Amino acid sequence: MCTITINPVFSTAPGAPGHTIVSLEGTYNCAGTIDVTIGCLGAASQATQALKINATMWIVNVDVANCPCGSPITITATCNDTPPCTTTLNTVLLCSCCPTVNSTTVSQGVWNSSGQLLVTFVTNLTIPAGCSVTVQRFYGDGAAGAVHTFTSSPPPYQETHAYNPQANYSSQLVVLSNQACTLPPIQITVSSAPPCATIPFWATACRTLQILFLLSAAVAGVLAIATTSLVCVGINNALPAITGGFTIAAMFFFFILSAVCRGCICAFFWKLIGQMLFIIGMVALMFVLPANCTQPLPFPTPNLALGAAMLLIAAGGAAVLYVIWYQNYKPQCPLTICDYWQVIKESLLTAVFVALTVFFILGTGVTLTHLGFDLLVIILLVFFTNQQIQANQNAGKC
Image (cartoon, rainbow, N blue to C red; front, side, top):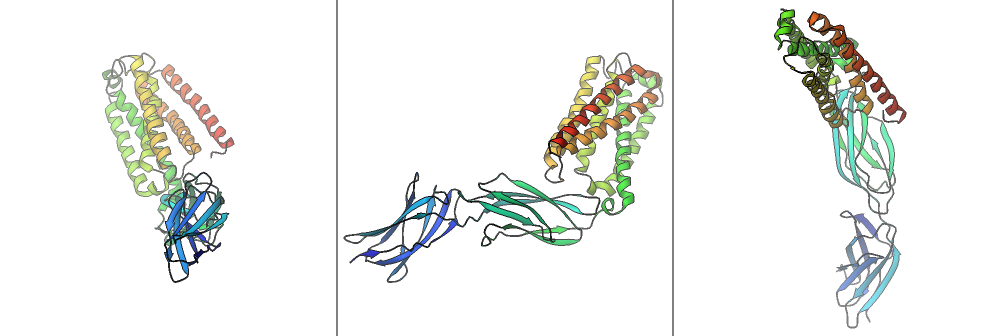
């Protein structure tokens, strides 16, 4: 007589997205093949032929699609004898709920004032349907990150940790909700810290060098615009030489910054270039009001002068500082929106000193009216920037 049974105890494992692999076994007393079907409400049944492993036992792995963990399922095993015999088990699909790590991106950012390297982990997880999964990252130096609980696959999330230098670490994401789930560790190697992160003198010097570079580079840029006007050069015959002197000073400060301070400044090159363009644009607003020595060259009309200044401001403040520096490097450094507005504020304050310097060098080429208009715009933007910083701090975005 044909008989067949299903063992009510079975195991599961995550399959492709939306799929669960169900491992079943049972007993049989029949000569024909054995088909096992699993179905749930609202999903097509999945059928697979079982394997007879001995004279009485069968096993099978069924790839079940679109049946969430915790949902009622119906398992049917049929022995294809003549006549066939069938058994049915109504149960619940209990999954192991082990998440799948699709990717983990590790980015080494800047060194902080404590001589530690900021390392950012961006984790992309897939959570089996119907599961609640709790994970926590252990950094490998005795510290651990925040505890995260997910009931569905989250967007990639990031965590940043400060590592001590000259050591190797093994970071691992641990599944707290199911200790049987094992995820592979990630190895991190941290090299020696740069002087700006370990020597207080160089930490202070780097901040000073940044200001000196921006001041000299922006003055050189604005004066370079003025040297294209024969009127400006006529007022101050030494203008080309002065422009060259500020250019050489800017190159010197940039060289020292690059050699000593690069590791402590996020996206070193892009930040300084963006600030320099932004400051030049802000100071170039002095050339908007007629009449000044830069007219008729290089700006034959006030509208053209305004357009050129706005183009420099947009290139530095929006294209370079916001898009390239902030948006591109915020996961790595890491950066917040307040860091962006703080850089804009620092650039505006530096622009005040650049404007004063240019005013005294150009002499009668620009008047107090030109300088006053420029400083008024800068001061108004400083107030606006402070409001942005405060608003984002109150919103918890910093």
